[in-house]
Image (cartoon, rainbow over all chains, first blue to last red; front, side, top):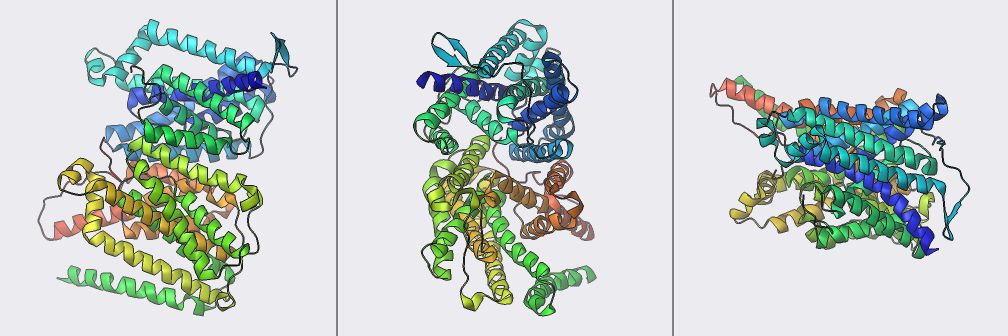
Amino acid sequence: MFDQLVIAGIATGCIYALLALGMTIIFNSSSLVNLAQGELLMAGGLSYVSFAAGQKLSFALALILAMACAAWVAMLAEGLALRPLRVANAPIVNAIVMTIGLSMVFKSGGEVVWGKTPLPAPSPASTTALWIGGISIAPQNLLIVVSAVLAMGIFWFFFDHTLIGRALQAVSTNREAAWIMGINADRMVLLAFALSGALSALAGVLVAPITAAAPTMGTMLGLKGFSAAIIGGFGSLWGAVAGGILLGLSESLTAGYVSSGFSTFISFGLVLLVLFLKPAGLLPTRR
Amino acid sequence: MAGRRVRRTVRVGGPVLALLFLAAFPLLGLKPYFSQLMDMLGIVLLLILGLNLIFGYAGQISIAQAGFFGLGAYTAALLQAKLGWPFPLAVLAGVASPSLLAAVLGTPILRLKGYYLALATIGLGTMVYEALEQWQDLTGGPIGVMGIQRPPALDGEALYYYLIWGLAVLAFLMVRNLDRCAVGRAWVAIRENERAAAAMGIDAARYKLLAFVLSAALAGLAGGLYAFLNRYISPDSFGLNYSMILIASMIIGGAGTLGGALIGSGLLVLLPELTQAFADYHLLVFGAILVLVLRFLPRGAWGSLRRHVADHRAGEATAASPTPEPQALAGTPR
């Protein structure tokens, strides 16, 4: 039972980690906390269902299109709603509330487009459990972990080893200095939103076969992603990943050993405790 | 000057007319549908006035208001339906329980700022909601609480209406008076710059806690009244969505202003009714209005109106020195 819970926890943790990573990328590039991150996951999950089940496209193609859709939504949000606030030098609270407004628009927009009933999502993974070293693993969980690790690897390579990725890092580190070096900061922020949307969409595609795809699917996941980012010390990319895994594990273990109904209650209790005792996060890593 | 006389007439006549309308409303003999709307308007006004204290005046983002609302409603409902407490005691307990929660958790929560504070209040609101839904032995879970009984004396719709609006008007006056005394000035000072406020000798932690507890108390009062109005409650009314809708209404109306609280609560109650064609999609309309307001009128409807009038007056007095005002709906140190 313990092994099962750990594996399920790591899989859930990978979903949180992808969301937390997405929030951190946006935060680093624009000092903005995007409370609509879960809705980007929802946009990805639902458009994936439309492409994969509706249009009968292959998994890979539907995944790429879903990631593109969410990236496009994120870029629209940045360009039309959030950048003007930054240009007007509005206080941070206005921006936080703006992302709340966007999350409301996206969620109900999703209901207009896809309806309220949860849609079943197809998955390339089979439903019969795999036995690896005496432990049974649901193939979907394996798919989640492998894809998330792969995506993080690609992301790391892009971030550290390509010119655009390094430009993005430069903007995160020092906006003015990056500007002097000839980096277009606004374009980099737009890129950060696109990347963040794509990562969240991947999380949505991976989680949809388990939870089914519905306009409300992203709300709670988004908040967990936010919690994971803060547990990891907001601003640190690998802290976000570690925070996600930690939160997923603790949630899975409390659901297994304490109470499944109260697992969300306990998760947020732990998050509050972390905020009270160590507001800089449990994993103080370098920015 | 004619302008001044008009303004004085509006300032005195407006509230008098509003009170006359409120007093005469049940006598108009309108359909129960309208009195239901008016009752809800009073309850929502209490919620938004409360939210205004912590978020609008003191500038501390709080996404927990629906949680306090739910805690108050469930406390009052369960004490009446299960233990048979009399109405006034049940409602008082409904005020007390969220206030107590806010008093206990307020100090560590309000030490946080910006997005940390946002997450902490989201966490608090979600924990209350989850407790209401999951603690089935006590709360009845998703089914909710039924069989909440009003005392026979308050059974008439008109009397209950007067009770709700009497309390709402009292709360309105309380917030107005707080706004105009040292407490309100301290809140605004904290909102605009907490460090500067502390340097002026304002005990920021204490004033923030006061705003938080009062906002929870008003939400609890609204909750108790709501439980006895509907006679049935379920967790659905008290989720995170509702906290967000309350924030949206407050900001659309104008954060940190009394007129804004009135406009916001009117919008929150009437918009879903006016947009019946959108069925359940009033969240879309709300979100869209919120996004547009933040983008183009960051002070909200009332704030912008007041600003416009002030500019007009300044032009009238030919004292052409527009006072710069921060664009904040609620400022936190950046």
